[in-house]
Amino acid sequence: MPRITPNLWFDTESEDAAEFYVSIFPNSKVTNVSRYAEGGYREAGSVMTVDFTLDGQDYTAINGGPQFPQTEAISLLINCADQAEVDYYWDALSKDGEEGQCGWLKDKFGVSWQVVPPGMEEVLGGSDPERSKRAMAAMLTMKKLDLAALLAAADGTG
Image 1 (tube, rainbow, N blue to C red):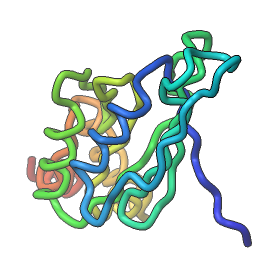
Image 2: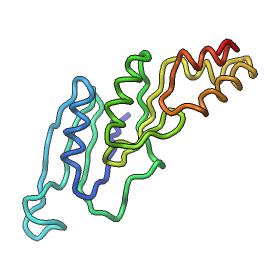
Image 3: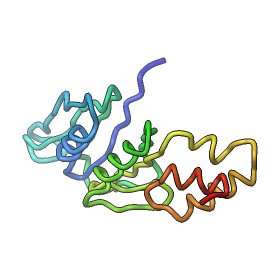
């Protein structure tokens, strides 16, 4: 199967966004910056696209103009290894951004992220519907997800 490269559309912030993201994720780097030529859509020499890699996943960011702003219709999901990772990515990505409900946030560039602790499938969709219902009710009260609180709610101890 061919690799799929998400392409993020920005007005003029693609280089700043790429630099921000590679500063947060391990094993990440900007791999290419291309610029508009004379007679192009934007001023000659201004950034057109930025290719970057976040821990092995390639992305492209384009400075395409203001007509397509970021929305929650597309989000990037981070499956975290533990609560410490949830805390790290939540704090880093939400800085100067906007915290949403149920583990969703928008970063300072308007890109939507879901920051998810391990075991969410089991706690929300396990074989015990009452346990799942309690976990879901707890999750609906949260912004950043708290795995211990979700498990306690699921088990009826929180």
